[in-house]
Length: 198
Image (cartoon, rainbow, N blue to C red; front, side, top):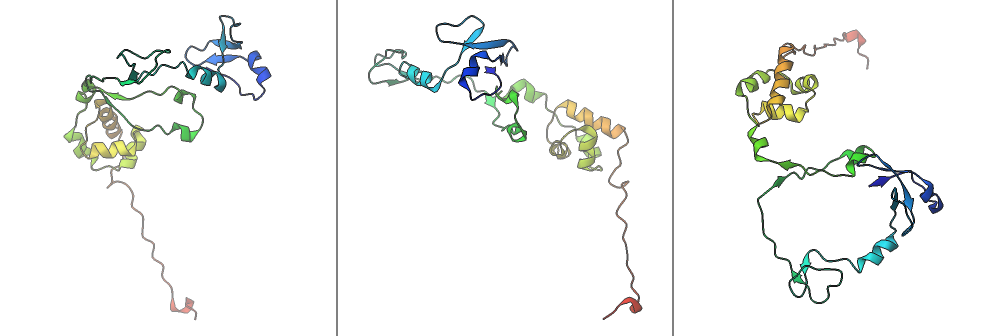
């Protein structure tokens, strides 16, 4: 995929430099059937529509049961689907678009959960008991973990060993416990009767 500075003037498109986001190499745009090896060809909506009539339908089979091609005609058949092994993927939404333009969002990566990764998740009841005397916000600030992660560990949820090591290191650094943190002092106001006016 090529990216470059925006310009609404089509006459400047062929003179601009474009960068391939995958390898960092520079390219220029060329004219159809007359471009060099280092030039790329830009497609317009008209080009896409012109190619659509030759677009083969991968989701269906031809009338004879064979794969569809550009010349396939007739009533298409359904393609049989054979299920393979289950793969567990995440459906978490990425909210980096809300924070501004992010070029890394162009190539989306699907999070896949593998059995060996799940096996590495563990619990630590001893550490859980120690964490009960500390504030989740203090622990999150000291470990750079999210408060949600800290609360999950304090609730006994399974996590990676590296998460427990961060919390253990924070406890060894001498964080203030809930009891040792100074409480807000009470302020009592006293008014004399002479100061009260109707």
